[in-house]
Amino acid sequence: MKPAMETAAEENAEQSQEKKVITRPEMEIGRYHWMYRSSRPHRYHHVPALRGNISPLGIQGCFECCIKCLGGVPYASLVATILCFSGVALFCGCGHVALTGTVTILEQHFSTTASDHALLSEVIQLMQYVIYGIASFFFLYGIILLAEGFYTTSAVKELHGEFKTTACGRCISGMFVFLTYVLGVAWLGVFGFSAVPVFMFYNIWSTCEVIKSLQTNVTVPGDQICVDIRQYGIIPWNAVPGKACGPILENICNTNEFYMSYHLFIVACAGAGATVIALLIYMMATTYNYAVLKFKSREDCCTKF
Image 1 (cartoon, rainbow, N blue to C red):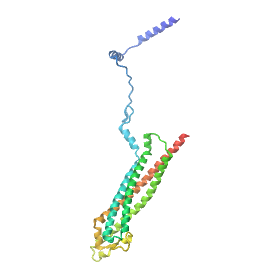
Image 2: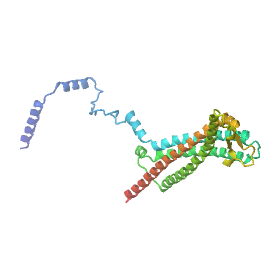
Image 3: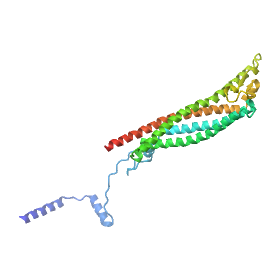
Image 4: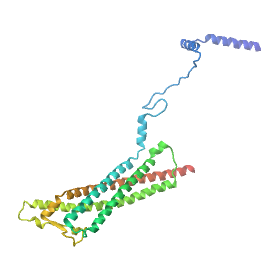
Protein backbone atom coordinates (compact mmCIF):
# COMPACT_ATOMS: atom_id res chain seq x y z
CA MET A 1 0.00 0.00 0.00
CA LYS A 2 2.77 2.46 0.95
CA PRO A 3 4.89 2.00 -2.14
CA ALA A 4 1.80 2.57 -4.29
CA MET A 5 1.19 5.93 -2.62
CA GLU A 6 4.81 7.01 -3.05
CA THR A 7 4.76 6.10 -6.72
CA ALA A 8 1.55 8.12 -7.17
CA ALA A 9 3.12 11.18 -5.55
CA GLU A 10 6.21 10.90 -7.72
CA GLU A 11 4.05 10.67 -10.82
CA ASN A 12 2.13 13.83 -9.80
CA ALA A 13 5.39 15.74 -9.19
CA GLU A 14 6.73 14.72 -12.59
CA GLN A 15 3.48 15.81 -14.25
CA SER A 16 3.61 19.23 -12.50
CA GLN A 17 7.21 19.75 -13.61
CA GLU A 18 6.27 18.89 -17.14
CA LYS A 19 3.39 21.40 -17.03
CA LYS A 20 5.62 24.27 -15.65
CA VAL A 21 6.71 26.63 -18.41
CA ILE A 22 9.79 28.82 -17.94
CA THR A 23 9.30 32.30 -19.42
CA ARG A 24 12.00 34.32 -21.16
CA PRO A 25 12.43 36.92 -18.36
CA GLU A 26 13.03 34.12 -15.88
CA MET A 27 15.63 32.67 -18.23
CA GLU A 28 17.39 36.08 -18.44
CA ILE A 29 17.40 36.45 -14.64
CA GLY A 30 18.82 32.95 -14.26
CA ARG A 31 21.52 33.65 -16.83
CA TYR A 32 22.41 36.91 -15.00
CA HIS A 33 22.82 35.11 -11.68
CA TRP A 34 24.85 32.38 -13.38
CA MET A 35 27.23 34.96 -14.89
CA TYR A 36 27.56 37.10 -11.72
CA ARG A 37 27.75 34.81 -8.76
CA SER A 38 28.14 37.65 -6.25
CA SER A 39 24.83 39.23 -7.13
CA ARG A 40 21.82 38.57 -4.94
CA PRO A 41 18.19 38.85 -5.81
CA HIS A 42 16.62 42.15 -4.74
CA ARG A 43 13.14 42.96 -3.63
CA TYR A 44 11.49 45.84 -5.37
CA HIS A 45 8.71 47.61 -3.52
CA HIS A 46 5.98 49.66 -5.05
CA VAL A 47 6.79 53.39 -4.89
CA PRO A 48 3.70 55.45 -4.08
CA ALA A 49 2.79 58.42 -6.20
CA LEU A 50 4.18 61.77 -5.03
CA ARG A 51 1.69 64.15 -3.46
CA GLY A 52 2.71 67.76 -3.32
CA ASN A 53 6.28 68.13 -2.11
CA ILE A 54 6.36 64.99 0.07
CA SER A 55 9.23 62.69 -0.84
CA PRO A 56 8.83 58.91 -1.25
CA LEU A 57 10.62 58.44 2.07
CA GLY A 58 7.81 60.25 3.90
CA ILE A 59 9.85 63.38 4.58
CA GLN A 60 7.94 66.64 4.27
CA GLY A 61 8.98 69.09 1.62
CA CYS A 62 10.03 72.70 2.06
CA PHE A 63 6.53 74.06 1.40
CA GLU A 64 4.90 71.87 4.05
CA CYS A 65 7.58 72.76 6.60
CA CYS A 66 7.12 76.47 5.92
CA ILE A 67 3.34 76.21 6.26
CA LYS A 68 3.70 74.30 9.54
CA CYS A 69 6.20 76.82 10.90
CA LEU A 70 4.02 79.76 9.88
CA GLY A 71 1.10 78.08 11.60
CA GLY A 72 3.06 78.17 14.86
CA VAL A 73 3.55 81.95 14.82
CA PRO A 74 1.34 83.88 17.29
CA TYR A 75 0.36 86.65 14.90
CA ALA A 76 -1.61 88.63 17.48
CA SER A 77 1.36 88.78 19.86
CA LEU A 78 3.72 89.53 16.97
CA VAL A 79 1.63 92.46 15.73
CA ALA A 80 1.23 93.75 19.29
CA THR A 81 4.99 93.53 19.89
CA ILE A 82 5.84 95.46 16.72
CA LEU A 83 3.20 98.08 17.52
CA CYS A 84 4.34 98.31 21.14
CA PHE A 85 8.01 98.75 20.21
CA SER A 86 7.13 101.41 17.63
CA GLY A 87 4.80 103.29 19.98
CA VAL A 88 7.16 103.26 22.93
CA ALA A 89 10.09 104.31 20.72
CA LEU A 90 8.12 107.26 19.32
CA PHE A 91 6.83 108.29 22.73
CA CYS A 92 10.18 108.06 24.48
CA GLY A 93 12.38 109.50 21.73
CA CYS A 94 10.14 112.34 20.61
CA GLY A 95 9.00 113.11 24.15
CA HIS A 96 12.58 113.41 25.39
CA VAL A 97 13.59 115.87 22.65
CA ALA A 98 10.34 117.84 22.93
CA LEU A 99 10.79 118.32 26.70
CA THR A 100 14.29 119.69 26.12
CA GLY A 101 12.95 122.17 23.56
CA THR A 102 10.16 123.22 25.93
CA VAL A 103 12.67 124.11 28.65
CA THR A 104 14.63 126.17 26.14
CA ILE A 105 11.52 128.12 25.08
CA LEU A 106 10.55 128.82 28.71
CA GLU A 107 14.03 130.00 29.66
CA GLN A 108 14.40 132.33 26.70
CA HIS A 109 10.92 133.86 26.40
CA PHE A 110 8.68 133.28 29.43
CA SER A 111 10.84 132.86 32.53
CA THR A 112 14.18 134.64 32.40
CA THR A 113 14.88 134.09 36.11
CA ALA A 114 16.30 130.62 36.78
CA SER A 115 14.73 130.33 40.23
CA ASP A 116 11.21 130.73 38.77
CA HIS A 117 11.39 127.58 36.68
CA ALA A 118 13.85 125.57 38.78
CA LEU A 119 11.14 123.16 39.95
CA LEU A 120 9.89 122.69 36.40
CA SER A 121 13.41 121.91 35.17
CA GLU A 122 13.83 119.27 37.87
CA VAL A 123 10.47 117.70 37.02
CA ILE A 124 11.32 117.59 33.30
CA GLN A 125 14.72 116.04 34.05
CA LEU A 126 13.01 113.43 36.22
CA MET A 127 10.53 112.69 33.42
CA GLN A 128 13.39 112.15 31.02
CA TYR A 129 14.90 109.54 33.35
CA VAL A 130 11.49 107.90 33.64
CA ILE A 131 11.37 107.75 29.84
CA TYR A 132 14.61 105.74 29.85
CA GLY A 133 13.11 103.28 32.31
CA ILE A 134 9.87 102.95 30.32
CA ALA A 135 11.77 102.18 27.14
CA SER A 136 13.88 99.49 28.81
CA PHE A 137 10.95 97.90 30.64
CA PHE A 138 8.70 97.65 27.61
CA PHE A 139 11.50 96.26 25.48
CA LEU A 140 11.88 93.33 27.89
CA TYR A 141 8.16 92.98 28.55
CA GLY A 142 7.32 92.83 24.85
CA ILE A 143 9.88 90.07 24.28
CA ILE A 144 8.52 88.09 27.25
CA LEU A 145 4.92 88.34 26.02
CA LEU A 146 5.98 87.35 22.51
CA ALA A 147 7.83 84.32 23.87
CA GLU A 148 4.78 83.35 25.92
CA GLY A 149 2.66 83.65 22.80
CA PHE A 150 4.97 81.28 20.92
CA TYR A 151 4.99 78.65 23.65
CA THR A 152 1.23 78.68 24.18
CA THR A 153 0.20 78.54 20.54
CA SER A 154 -1.64 75.37 19.65
CA ALA A 155 0.36 74.89 16.46
CA VAL A 156 3.61 74.89 18.42
CA LYS A 157 2.18 72.24 20.72
CA GLU A 158 1.58 70.08 17.67
CA LEU A 159 5.18 70.62 16.56
CA HIS A 160 6.80 69.76 19.87
CA GLY A 161 4.35 67.15 21.00
CA GLU A 162 1.98 67.07 23.93
CA PHE A 163 2.96 68.72 27.17
CA LYS A 164 1.38 68.88 30.58
CA THR A 165 0.66 72.25 32.10
CA THR A 166 1.63 72.92 35.68
CA ALA A 167 0.13 75.16 38.31
CA CYS A 168 3.22 77.39 38.13
CA GLY A 169 2.79 77.87 34.37
CA ARG A 170 -0.86 78.79 34.77
CA CYS A 171 -0.02 81.25 37.57
CA ILE A 172 2.64 82.92 35.41
CA SER A 173 0.19 83.24 32.52
CA GLY A 174 -2.44 84.69 34.86
CA MET A 175 0.13 87.15 36.21
CA PHE A 176 0.84 88.35 32.66
CA VAL A 177 -2.90 88.87 32.11
CA PHE A 178 -3.21 90.96 35.29
CA LEU A 179 -0.04 92.96 34.60
CA THR A 180 -1.09 93.68 31.02
CA TYR A 181 -4.47 94.99 32.18
CA VAL A 182 -2.77 97.24 34.75
CA LEU A 183 -0.32 98.57 32.15
CA GLY A 184 -3.17 99.18 29.73
CA VAL A 185 -5.02 101.34 32.25
CA ALA A 186 -1.79 103.16 33.13
CA TRP A 187 -1.02 103.92 29.50
CA LEU A 188 -4.49 105.35 29.03
CA GLY A 189 -3.44 107.93 31.63
CA VAL A 190 -0.11 108.47 29.85
CA PHE A 191 -1.94 108.99 26.57
CA GLY A 192 -4.20 111.60 28.16
CA PHE A 193 -1.23 113.29 29.85
CA SER A 194 0.72 113.43 26.56
CA ALA A 195 -2.19 115.32 24.97
CA VAL A 196 -1.76 118.23 27.43
CA PRO A 197 1.42 119.73 25.87
CA VAL A 198 -0.11 119.24 22.43
CA PHE A 199 -3.09 121.33 23.56
CA MET A 200 -0.83 124.03 24.99
CA PHE A 201 1.33 124.29 21.87
CA TYR A 202 -1.77 124.25 19.68
CA ASN A 203 -3.20 127.24 21.56
CA ILE A 204 0.06 129.15 21.10
CA TRP A 205 0.23 128.23 17.41
CA SER A 206 -3.42 129.18 16.77
CA THR A 207 -2.83 132.53 18.52
CA CYS A 208 0.13 133.18 16.25
CA GLU A 209 -2.03 132.40 13.23
CA VAL A 210 -4.58 134.92 14.45
CA ILE A 211 -1.83 137.56 14.75
CA LYS A 212 -0.67 136.83 11.20
CA SER A 213 -4.20 137.14 9.87
CA LEU A 214 -4.68 140.47 11.66
CA GLN A 215 -1.69 142.03 9.89
CA THR A 216 -3.94 142.72 6.90
CA ASN A 217 -6.44 144.53 9.17
CA VAL A 218 -4.85 147.75 10.47
CA THR A 219 -7.76 148.69 12.72
CA VAL A 220 -7.10 145.84 15.16
CA PRO A 221 -3.55 145.91 16.68
CA GLY A 222 -1.85 142.59 17.27
CA ASP A 223 -0.19 143.74 20.47
CA GLN A 224 -3.41 143.15 22.40
CA ILE A 225 -3.31 139.41 21.65
CA CYS A 226 -1.18 137.57 24.22
CA VAL A 227 -0.43 134.10 25.54
CA ASP A 228 0.12 133.79 29.29
CA ILE A 229 1.99 130.55 30.14
CA ARG A 230 1.39 131.13 33.87
CA GLN A 231 -2.28 130.21 33.52
CA TYR A 232 -1.28 126.62 32.68
CA GLY A 233 0.44 126.26 36.06
CA ILE A 234 3.84 125.19 34.75
CA ILE A 235 5.57 128.35 36.05
CA PRO A 236 4.62 130.49 39.09
CA TRP A 237 2.58 133.68 38.81
CA ASN A 238 5.54 135.85 39.82
CA ALA A 239 7.61 134.66 36.84
CA VAL A 240 8.85 137.44 34.57
CA PRO A 241 7.69 138.12 31.89
CA GLY A 242 5.31 135.11 32.01
CA LYS A 243 3.51 136.08 28.80
CA ALA A 244 4.22 137.06 25.20
CA CYS A 245 2.20 139.39 23.00
CA GLY A 246 2.04 140.52 19.39
CA PRO A 247 5.30 140.37 17.38
CA ILE A 248 7.21 138.73 20.25
CA LEU A 249 4.76 135.84 20.25
CA GLU A 250 4.98 135.61 16.48
CA ASN A 251 8.76 135.39 16.68
CA ILE A 252 8.44 132.59 19.22
CA CYS A 253 6.25 130.64 16.82
CA ASN A 254 8.84 131.06 14.07
CA THR A 255 11.69 129.56 16.11
CA ASN A 256 12.98 126.06 15.42
CA GLU A 257 12.50 125.05 19.07
CA PHE A 258 8.78 125.79 18.94
CA TYR A 259 8.29 124.11 15.56
CA MET A 260 10.18 120.95 16.54
CA SER A 261 8.69 120.69 20.03
CA TYR A 262 5.13 121.11 18.76
CA HIS A 263 5.41 118.39 16.13
CA LEU A 264 7.42 116.07 18.37
CA PHE A 265 4.74 116.29 21.06
CA ILE A 266 2.16 115.31 18.43
CA VAL A 267 4.25 112.29 17.40
CA ALA A 268 4.80 111.35 21.06
CA CYS A 269 1.05 111.47 21.67
CA ALA A 270 0.49 109.26 18.62
CA GLY A 271 3.12 106.84 19.95
CA ALA A 272 1.32 106.67 23.29
CA GLY A 273 -1.92 105.89 21.44
CA ALA A 274 -0.19 103.12 19.45
CA THR A 275 1.11 101.66 22.72
CA VAL A 276 -2.41 101.64 24.15
CA ILE A 277 -3.66 99.73 21.08
CA ALA A 278 -0.75 97.28 21.41
CA LEU A 279 -1.59 96.65 25.06
CA LEU A 280 -5.23 96.03 24.13
CA ILE A 281 -4.08 93.38 21.66
CA TYR A 282 -1.79 91.96 24.36
CA MET A 283 -4.80 91.75 26.70
CA MET A 284 -6.72 89.63 24.23
CA ALA A 285 -3.69 87.46 23.44
CA THR A 286 -2.71 86.81 27.06
CA THR A 287 -6.32 86.11 28.03
CA TYR A 288 -6.58 83.58 25.22
CA ASN A 289 -3.26 81.98 26.21
CA TYR A 290 -4.42 81.67 29.81
CA ALA A 291 -7.69 80.11 28.68
CA VAL A 292 -5.78 77.59 26.53
CA LEU A 293 -3.55 76.60 29.44
CA LYS A 294 -6.51 76.29 31.81
CA PHE A 295 -8.47 74.16 29.32
CA LYS A 296 -5.40 71.99 28.77
CA SER A 297 -5.01 71.44 32.50
CA ARG A 298 -8.65 70.37 32.80
CA GLU A 299 -8.21 68.02 29.88
CA ASP A 300 -5.16 66.45 31.54
CA CYS A 301 -7.11 66.00 34.78
CA CYS A 302 -9.98 64.34 32.94
CA THR A 303 -7.64 61.93 31.16
CA LYS A 304 -6.14 60.88 34.51
CA PHE A 305 -9.50 59.73 35.81
